[in-house]
Amino acid sequence: MMKELRLMKGNEAIAEGAIRAGADGYFGYPITPQSEVMEYLMAEQPEKRTGMVVLQAESELAAINMVYGAAGTGKRVMTSSSSPGISLMQEGISYCAGSELPCLIVNVVRGGPGLGTIQPSQADYFQSTKGGGHGDYRLPVLAPASVQEMFDFVFLGFDLAFKYRNPVLILSDGLIGQMMEKVELCEQRPRNAEFDPGWTITGRTPDREHNIITSLDLDSARQERHNQHLQEKYGKIQADEVRFEELSTEDAEYLFVAYGSSARICQKAMQLAREKGIKLGLLRPITLWPFPAKPLAALAPRIKGILCVEQSAGQMIEDVRLSVGSGTRVEHFGRMGGMIPSPEEVLENFEKFFIRK
Amino acid sequence: MDIKDIIKPENLVYQKSSLLTDKIFSYCPGCGHGTAHRIIMEVIEEMGIVADTIGVASVGCSVLAYDFMNVDMTGAAHGRAPAVATGIKRCWPDKFVFTYQGDGDLAAIGTAETIHACNRGENITIFFINNGIYGMTGGQMAPTTLEGMKTSTSPYGRVLSTMGHPIRMTELVAHLPGVYYATRQSVHSPRNVRRAKKAVRAAFEVQKEKKGLSLVEIVSNCNSGWKLEPVKANEWMEQNMFPFYPLGDIKVDGKLVVNQ
Picture 1 (cartoon, helix red, strand yellow):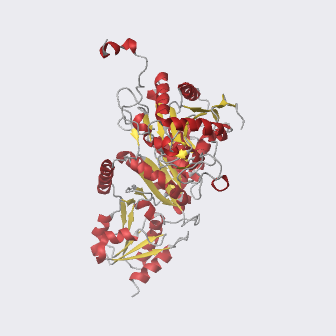
Picture 2: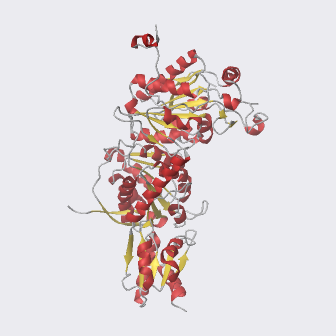
Picture 3: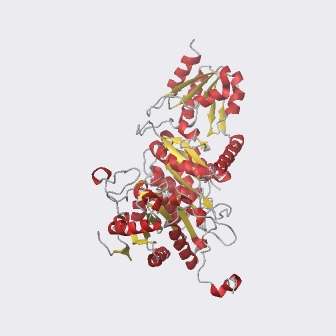
């Protein structure tokens, strides 16, 4: 069969990915720079293609709670937004985590704090990987670095969500969301047809007790046990779901650690460095949580220095430092407020830190 | 004749709905929640729709409604029940979906979700228990608290000029085209319980026929929050709540019957 190739925007790839991944529902609210997700879905009329429901909610609060409701019935549902909207959704995300609801959330990050800017940023790393809302919880966080990965990670995200009964976050940014690249599309996956009678609320049948979806338990001992159960689940995810990519690390003396659009910029900077004879490699975390701490720690002893490149004041760098310990020098270079560093700028700053003594 | 002669199927005149669990209600003695739970469960049982019914509890005194209602249910964050119900209904258009919300939940923090679910004409049923106070958190002022009414956050009585006016949510949303049926009932007397149950049935019938949103407000007492004995609380409700929140249908078959 011939490959189905298409030139798409990152946001469009999320939308097409949702339809093809057999999503049952999408609930969203417009916000730049991710509005194309819902625009594409509305134009594509997935209710005719697969029966998928698309609804424009009155707010991000409503959207995530629509996701909460539908996810409790075992449907494959998702939402997408950008930073300020994701902040609004934190309440609902915390409830989804507490109630153990599988769902997919996409954040096409823009600069903050506050209304910030509509330009790309990676300043939501802390919010995404350290909790975000209230309570002890974690979300698997997938960081696509290409439009192809925007498409692919919708499938992966839903798979992880249902494997662990947990919300999953795709942490993209305005650059990946807005840029156009070639995407290889896969075949249509069927929508969910079976709903686990053990926990989904689809109507109580005579053969079972009523199912209840809730995060509330006023009995402290039981609530602690529920929290312990969540932590065990997160431990399993940390053990089994770490994903990363290494580029030119075999002979590397120095290392970039970067994810998403910054990883793409670093790839070019690495090329420029190697042309100058500097042996630079790149470690790209694909899952930001769980963070690829072990592979990074394994590389660290033979690395002279690590430069974390983030479009933020330096957030992931904390996880990098925790991973490699104090034996390896770790520095940060980043731009903020929607400014995107050029590969030349990244290399120049790398050289400032590590080459020019 | 001993008790064994009396307890016979032919002597049975009333029994608890099979859709109420055996858990002891967490509600205060004299509170209307228990009766409201009962009539909703009785209607679902009588219609034979339990396998197709999904309920949404909210935050407030009825936060644990799912412990007492023996149907599939989900909790919802404070005020978000209509959005949660929307998500369920859109994915399961043939299921019966209802929310059970108090006045703080529906008329304050969840105003946007309520109005927009109503405006979209979501084919769900909202049960709105209005006692004019935040019961669970200890009797604070609600958006529905009457003028002059004393609560823990309006200890000298609600002052309209600084605390705003009590809001009639059912009349407000009844003006939206998406709302097909809106009514206000109470459950403080046998006659009112019978009327309220008819309204609950009518609301589910609207959903069955996919006509749009149906809303049943039940004006109820909060003897703990009002600091009155149950019987006195009901008298106070008749004298003070009903004049501001008059009982009766507000919108039937998509047409306003009361225009306030």
